Length: 145
Image (cartoon, rainbow, N blue to C red; front, side, top):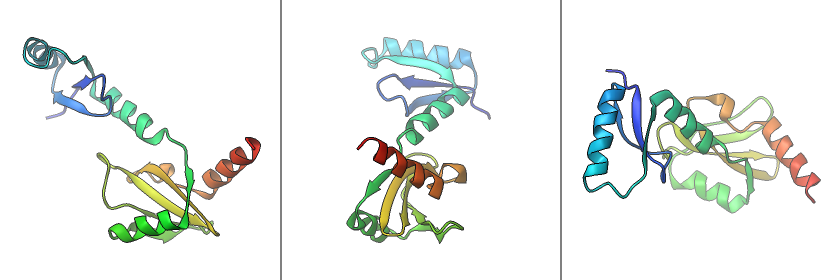
């Protein structure tokens, strides 16, 4: 069964309260939520695809940030790294095997003697840390000094 609609608590916009196969089912469930013990919360119904896109924007919206060697090493040693490799531009990177939600997890990267992290979609390599992303971060950091 394909889900088409989702009920979301507006205070936690990245987490679905429940998903439904049609708008009528979501409407009925929302009425019940409002009438029952959940009436003090602010819910909305949205299309499932829109919800997924909003989650992606929220999770991936934070920019890359520079971290210390100790933070890199702690992430590397807490659990076995996933997809650990050095790319064609010399960026050594890995994903945390523990996911935040769905396919979203933290990625850690090392380029030279600098270390970085960012939330990424493990299934979408275009969201992964790249040399271009590191260069842009470095350029932005210099321009704000």
